[in-house]
Image (cartoon, rainbow, N blue to C red; front, side, top):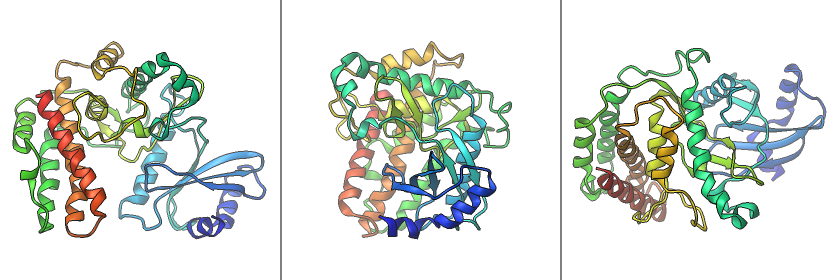
Length: 344
């Protein structure tokens, strides 16, 4: 573990940088790589009697990885002090010269992710499991209520024509998979044209821009151990300025239901949880946004996420990704489009 950490993070350089930031001094100790659903590196460590979590891009950063980390840090700084459950930002370094990549330090989160197993409190109390979804709906409602301009994020995204751009953007990504000759093509996805046409024909005429998480589902939240409340919304890689109702749509696309044959995320045991219709109604009591076209956002989320997951299947067809992973994600894509058709 120590050798792996040393290859990923220069602890001596990190210590010198922390000294310059006026952070607690001393030897970095109790280092631990944290797991999760992200490719980014999370290192938990102690120094000067305090605990920190460092977040940096993966070992082989993608072209946008460093900028993604900078954007995450900027967002966490902007929502500091808000009632949105989030990791507390301690300090950020956009300079790639220190560790070879951008990184930031945040406070550790005292909580658990439900997709890795429920805590004893939640296993023992069905009312806690029922409450968990409502807490998630409240989290994104609070996020969407923040005035992004007042928060200093006026240039954080491109809200103009945000909804108008969505279908064409993801259609273009889907078309790019044709570069993989062994991919069976879009015909293997049920309702691919019907869903796209419905989205174009039923697009809301207007929306109120706000901050969106961009990938809001059960894998990207942490809950308190002793209550059904959110400890934090995590993994802000796709955060931007757009239509906050899409975060609710993402929850609609990924929340387990009785019909889905291939869930994107799962929690065991899935019993006594609220239904997605209950969560939609609850969100509606917390926002001034027009909810009349909320099914459109659920369909868009299914469309967008399904196309993103199909990319791994296309690569797997060419031997560029594990076949088992590709098959599993293609099944999730099919399940998402079947869900979109049911919504339609």
